[in-house]
Length: 275
Image (cartoon, rainbow, N blue to C red):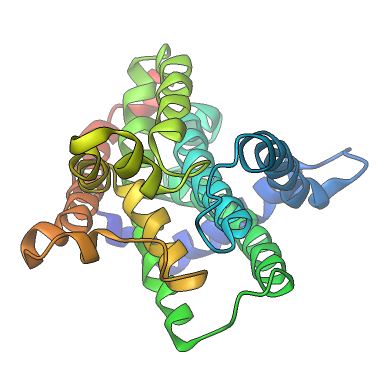
């Protein structure tokens, strides 16, 4: 089995049908329906904004930090939704796997596409909120597209790995919930990265740089804030003069993606027997 199988006509049609069905079923019998895909992150943002921005004054020295907070939340939600949904996807489609022969990559990718549709709705809200907040549009905003692509590749790679691992290890779901919760607070979402460098003493700048080097989501959130909201949000590219070290989060993302695909490919031949 090869991942290029997803480009055949049969698998493309199946992928389209699964994405459509998954998205419709998600909010079936819900009063507000698709609105929940926007309301959920906005409600989380409202809570975070009141607690951390208004009362605790996080990001007071960063322009438009409220917009940066909302952007960080929807980027993290996309990563969380793609990886968690992908992890459960193979086991959740066990009946289909036993009855029909098709590329198993389609299942994980369809789950990620549903999350990406949600992300698209939320991103439009961020743009509107940014304009209302006084953020000036510029050509550098277009750099958000490769940054979102990096986030998608990272999330999909992790989803491939988790989905194959979850077939044998059903305890993985609560473990991953704890990991993502810890990751949320380890990533500069509710606080600016400058808070790490200014509050952690002499080693603060080193800690901040290591956070961006070892946590690709942190680098993605910070780069997105820099190109979309304000250059006052520092990036790894500004802190690290060595080009190869500055590129490490992108290389790390690609390694995670190809490693996840390889692990999924090796394990996929046993899925029908185990789910």
